[in-house]
Image (cartoon, rainbow, N blue to C red; front, side, top):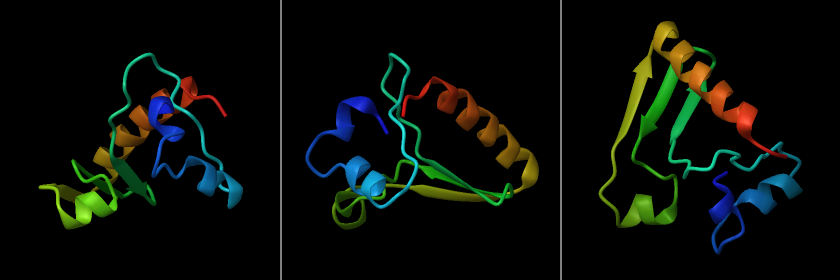
Length: 88
């Protein structure tokens, strides 16, 4: 989670943590703006879509679903880089 937004209204950080999910705060000094899911090392879901009510109901958003292990591996590499900077 972007640290500056985890504690704000509508944030899901604590709800997910309370549900037993392993969540971490972004540890880099810049705003984290990644919106990506990597599924089973083969599917990448990315785009501007925030997975929020505003995104679903009122924003102009885009989402791209890509199938392919090579592209998924590149996204996973970036995820791991950012994850290494995160704090529990």
